Image (cartoon, rainbow, N blue to C red):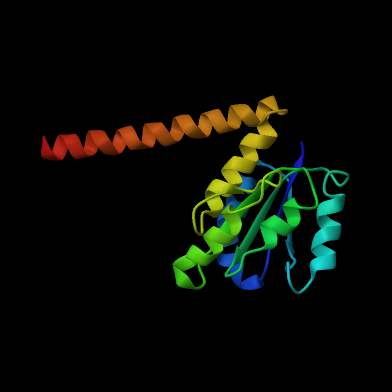
Amino acid sequence: MKKVGIIMGSDSDLPVVEKAINVLKDFGIPFEVHIYSAHRTPEQARAFALAARENGFGALICAAGMAAHLAGAIAANTTIPVIGIPIKSSLDGLDALLSTVQMPSGIPVATVAINGAANAAFLAAQIISLTDADLADKIDARRKADAEAVLAKDAKVAKEYN
């Protein structure tokens, strides 16, 4: 199974990123977590991205706030799918969202909601599941369980109020 690389710009992003880590653990997807800054450690970030395919990664998740150039800097140096998590740190996270989502043609970054780490991991899992039938089955089972949980809540509310 391909692994997922999780890169955050600062250790202050870890409380948000842990939601992605937990999803990957739930699915049994191997991952690595690193702190690289697009601005403070650009050489290390670039080296990681350049070697990502060779090192067995199938998707990369990048979390950063404020200027949030990390996902774009990583995407510029690899053709592995990159998923950006804009971190809410200033301007309600809109600065990070716009910095993550506004990429030039040919250098895509899939971008989830501000602080949307869980969805970043779900998307990474879906990408990896394209070549892993067992993982695809786990994702399908999770979707079914989530739907059943919603329907159980609906039945409870309907019974009480209808």
